[in-house]
Image 1 (spheres, helix red, strand yellow):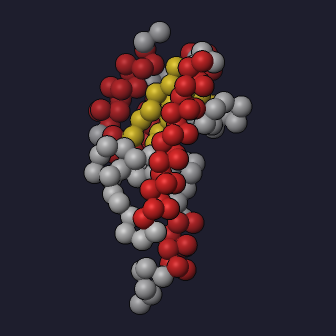
Image 2 (cartoon, one colour; image 1 turned 135 degrees about the vertical axis):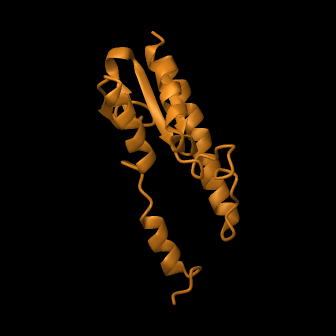
Length: 137
């Protein structure tokens, strides 16, 4: 049995983490589409390359992973056991970059919504948040 803490194992595990088309993102996409909205994905010209872009409504949606973006839930508060300082710095950098990107988007006239990975386990909650955000014109 491979050592779960070996560099090779950790490297492999990290390589399997996706940045796009994650399960939480697919859940949100499906709901938004079912609600009758059409969107573009990961528009490079916008700060932060939002997961969903609704150009007609000037709205963008980010689906953040709780761990990587340090959500206040139990998944986001996990402290890595190895290389702790590196990972904390990396995650804090993500949070700081997220703040900057949201500020830039607002200045450009976009209305952003951040949805968290842990919320996607409760479809009713996500649907409610999306309804409030998308219907509010």
